[in-house]
Length: 360
Image (cartoon, rainbow, N blue to C red; front, top):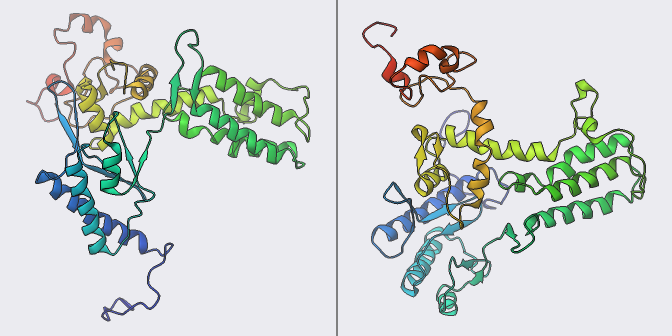
């Protein structure tokens, strides 16, 4: 299109490069072709998919997940299914002229299998391992973990080894702590509760870097760390308290679960754990394996819900008496005597609303 007029097709002499603005859209179109091939193979029974279900409740089926430049395909550990999957990848390469690097691809086993080598040969890739975030030590070590937290601390120490060779002013150190040191563990803190001993060690590194000399010499800390982490309006430097940051990042998932209506991850959690409170929350997580992440997040549900307010929509998912939707406090607290006389204390707004008048 030139000057808002279509002038026909033109041929490109150099093709599209990786950083070309159009290349990302072409990649999405190519992945859509792969998605169609996988969906048709699943519908006709050539490959299986992952089934997630809680008791006799809803069921969620997942055949594949597409990320920025990675693809996860769920398949049953059978040579026949892997052979069909290899044909799907071959047809995708022929249709899109994209080459799949099987040398970088991995088969990740959920359970131990005896015929792993045969499956690897069938698909032509290698065997990978599930990423373990942390593993609790048994028998006498309840407060210690073998975890990715040690990797975060080591990453911070390596970065400090570079900084301590240079002369950096106090203002520069404050900037580096806020922009880099406090952000290195944000990803892990978004999903997992940081152990107290890790919090103490990471904050100690920040304190020593702030008050130390050129070679991180031990010097007296002139101001308490709680004051340093205070707001600038109150005389602090606005540093992040890792414990509070961890609590907030975990609590954000409670809000996301309530607001994201059709998100795939929410549907998976509803199918895995069930729902309560009209779908705003999942049921209490029970079990030992495969529930640790959401179980830790749900520990922050109480304070989140105590500070949430509802905006009324269809009125069928908000409790009239006990949910915060009208004013600063719930109606059960504002009209406590009337609430004690109520026959239906868990009634929704829709059930309590009188539809015989214009405004209800």
